[in-house]
Image 1 (tube, helix red, strand yellow):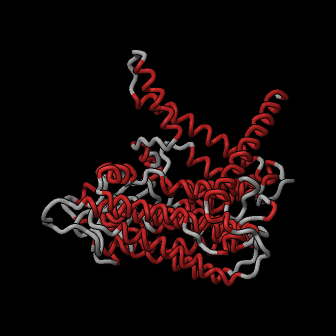
Image 2 (cartoon, rainbow, N blue to C red):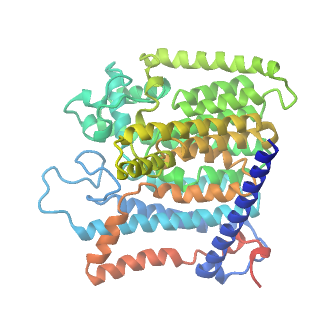
Image 3 (cartoon, one colour):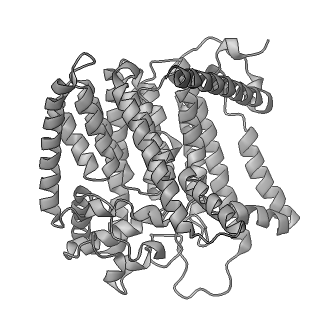
Length: 534
């Protein structure tokens, strides 16, 4: 045991050393090769500068809106009648313009890069200078989010699956047994990714209840259903902003910084609003439930977290951490059984009510691993499995990729479960909110499929509870996450190689300009004086 502990300390030391050098290297590159080098940190003046990042963020999301609205944009589903504008004609004449395709990609990538830069610098300013007026930050969020609300569903077609499942629910067809293909030749079915046409839904009864109610509310109009689902996610992001600010206050942290790290996070804006993913509802309910627990409102916190689990199952982690830590670090195991029992009863009651209202039983529990049909290199457990299977096949042994993936994915889940158990048992010494956030992040990283919007589950909680280098990882995942699986990158490179010189010059000017564009004197306050070379 002593040897294992020594190895653990050694690995921790190597990690801290490696990450310290990486962080220092990133800061050096920022200082040397970005406009930050033009400024020297001076005394912080006031928050009157906030209009500048507000405007820059609006420009960034506006570029994404413009690029994503082209009729042949690779960032959305291009089919007639799937949005209010930017869709191809029913009978298009001629072939799509490659120039417009390249411009679409350049505008979206340019907007992404600008948004990342603005948010990163703003987050660093608020880390060093507490007390930003949250009301102004709400206005900033509104400005940044408006183009994403107007834009077609971007980067994912999942919202069309939601709409189809809502239509099924409204006609009493169980999405837990049947797939959207059941709807036949219907506008609802046309937008669904072929991968999910026959796949049952893994979502909880609360989401099906909301989904089916929206289909009825819109009188079974496909386009209106998709639009209302987008607005529902916008409201959910508002819940995230309100909840994380309350959570930060309860933990004695700066609510302004937590708000920027969570609600104004590019991952949230691009995937939860732009992609209209139902993870926004789950995360919003979860963070409010955790905030209520911090304020010692036990039953209310359990109800909110159980409602979050009735959207997507991973929110059940919140129930486990709240009930286990409720009585404090001095509680014995037998004493903890009472709050755990209350949590079980409340959860069963909440799930029972929503199951009764939805009307389709608990079939969703058996469908939780349905996304395992996707083989994504972004998921370590899946990537390792595909590499191992290929190596085994190369040496002449006959083995199916599926059988190897079943082993590596099981090991990934077992490791994630072990990490969650370890964090739960040490939650009170490490901070239970922070431990909960880390457990959710590890669940995503070690799961069978890594989708960028999954990271919002844990990152929103870490926004109000991070410690030390976790801030670096929060920023890194938020910036890298939206680019996971993002289409258009290869098309952009091919287009730049084969396009005419003038078009190449325009594309390079836009992307290069975004990278080196000075964003204003306010960025100097994102650098502590002791980090700046003399």
